[in-house]
Structure formats: C-alpha cells, structure tokens
Image (cartoon, rainbow, N blue to C red; front, top):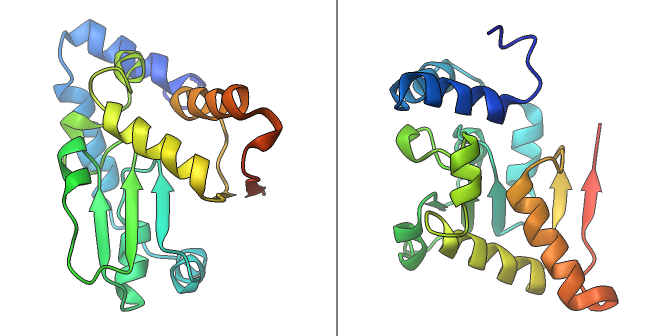
Length: 174
C-alpha cells in the first residue's frame, strides 16, 4: 500500500495491524515519524502566548507543549487515563492529548479498533472529561478537520442532549 495514495489512514493502520497481528510496525512508524526534528513555528508561539489554560489535541507530537515551555509556562500533559487524576504543581497550562503521545506509541489511537474502543474501555475517562469541557467551556478549534469519529460523537451527543442550550464554539480554518 502506498500511504501517499491512501485517504483513509485509520483503515490503513487497521490493515497493517490485521496483516501483522500486532502493532509493532505501527508503533515503530509513530516513533520514527514523530521523533524527526520538527521545529516550533510562529503559529505555535502565538498560541503559547494566548491566555489559554486548557488545550485539547489529537496530535502525538510535542510541539504545543514545547512552545508553551519556551514561553515559560508550566505545562501539565495528560495522555492516558491515569494522568487525569494527577495535578502538576503550579501549572498554568493543561494539554489533553486525546489520541496519545509520542512517549507511548503503543497507546496511540490510530487503528479502527482503537477508535471503536475509545470511550468504552480504553479512554472512557478522557471522553468524560472532554464532554465536561465542551459543556462548561467555549472551544476555539484551530485547523481541526472535524473528521475524528470520537470527537464528532461527543459533539453530536452534546447537541442532542442540550439542543439550542449548548455553549457556542468557534473554529478557524485555512
């Protein structure tokens, strides 16, 4: 399979998992790709300077947290359920990495199985925290494609349950 010709990367990851009967190749690819030197760009620096306390991302990389640390901010990173109950002292930014982190590629949400398991067993607490945040906070989406099935499920659940009483959210697209 040629990854440059495939458009459904979730199915491509699932195919790879099914073919090899494990995710070691996927884990290696995540490590290889996300450990390449990527520079913080001006967009990351701008985001880090904004008076935002809570960040949600589906990215595995560390660019947001690197930019926040460069801006002298104390960052508390959450990428698995166990971390949700811990609070870093004197933090002034929290990053929720809802699909995992480069530090733990075996826990990354990438295959169809991972998406179907999301919020049922593997990341139920993450989904609960996200639902609470969408209920009580206004989100600004930057460059988010809205193609993530888990996120769309949560958004539609909020819309169905709250109707016209849900909080407004905003997005900026290229």
